[in-house]
Length: 64
Image 1: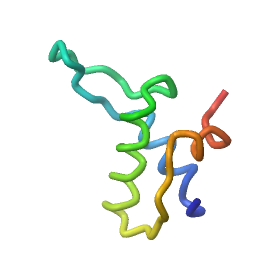
Image 2 (image 1 turned 120 degrees about the vertical axis):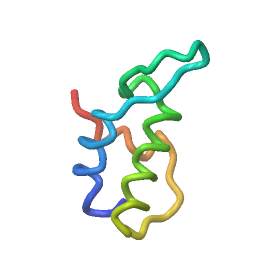
Image 3 (image 1 turned 45 degrees about the vertical axis):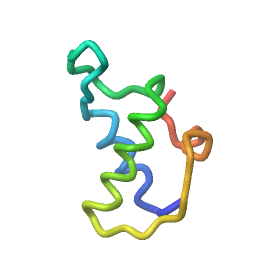
Image 4 (image 1 turned 30 degrees about the vertical axis):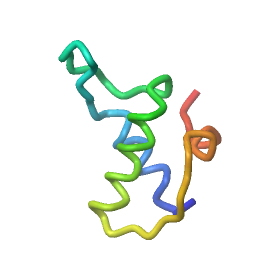
């Protein structure tokens, strides 16, 4: 995992997504797909090289 993972995690947990009902909700550690997508978005926007990862790879970096 890139060293910027902590910054990416903090950023991702402040982002929102639109659910199937059209409601905008905050990304949390319980919205695993949205969290992974947000982390990837952060890495891509900041030109950070990363390898394929899943939610399980993020678990050690999740806040309590």
